Image 1 (cartoon, rainbow, N blue to C red):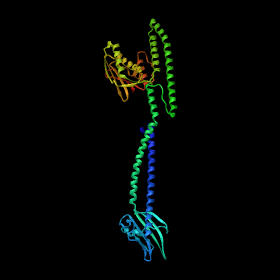
Image 2 (spheres, rainbow, N blue to C red):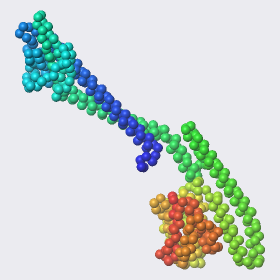
Image 3 (cartoon, one colour):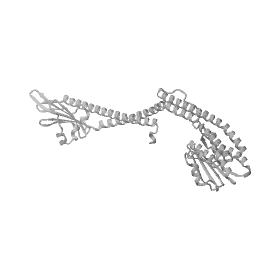
Image 4 (cartoon, rainbow, N blue to C red):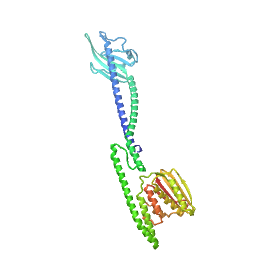
Length: 438
């Protein structure tokens, strides 16, 4: 998945999941703790109400006596949500004015405490129920009374919902704040990696030769190994360049002597082969010292214009018309010498084989630099096209004057991960298309 293609996105998503899970567990724990505290507080309030009722109750020969009005005003209001009932072994001994709205069968079915002196706190329908059983002794009188106080649950649940709304709102704000801080921390923590990527890009573009600056100790091993690898690669490239340069110079003199003798003896076959050997040496030397890693972005259109202007002078006698459709902003990351060699070979072949008309276009298509060169000549036979474009085809398998320049083009373009395509042009000759990654 593209979402997890970067290290920062993986860390951010993982941390976000952990923070969200932690906040959810924290919210659940706080909610349960607050709920338990509300239930405990409710039980304490109902116990206080029971003690209040027992404090104002009196027992005489006629039975239990309670004042008409209780100091807790809700006991004196119908449907106030707070109700009290006192039962004895003979039945209902007393009930508050507020409990007049309760059904008689509901009052009779109130559960009692397990034993005398014990309390019972439970949920009964939509009410909290607190029951307390007591043995009352007054002189010779002794009776067992069951004091029950009921309170509606709506008040507590409303308070709990208000707390939950506040809790989750603030936990959400805290989660977002933590995620924002985490994002800042990740950006700061991964900054050395981004700087390393930028330095590597500078090295690729040729503006730097090695990794500079201070890196965290976790990256120092990587940067040291990369610098060592770059230095080794540069030394290796320089050694190859020196060796091949020495080889080219060593072969130049014998080849010159051979060519001089051939001119005197007029041996065309050996002369062609010596010229071919010179082309091969020059091409292999250029190929060995090519430095794509340090290539910078260059514009292709000006190169085409310079080459066309020069070749029009060289082939002035043919009076060739050249159409140019050039995107002046089309850039490609390549060595300018390589680009000039490729374009020079391709356009020169077009001038050599064209009769009157050449068409050249330079444009960008899907992050590729596409150069098309067409002519109205005879084209290339299909069987030779397959041979030239076969990947890995060696330069020395081609005959002099039959595609060495095009083989060089294929070799250079493929070294840049590009492609060469040959087709029939609507002008009548060959359409050669080069595609190079920008």
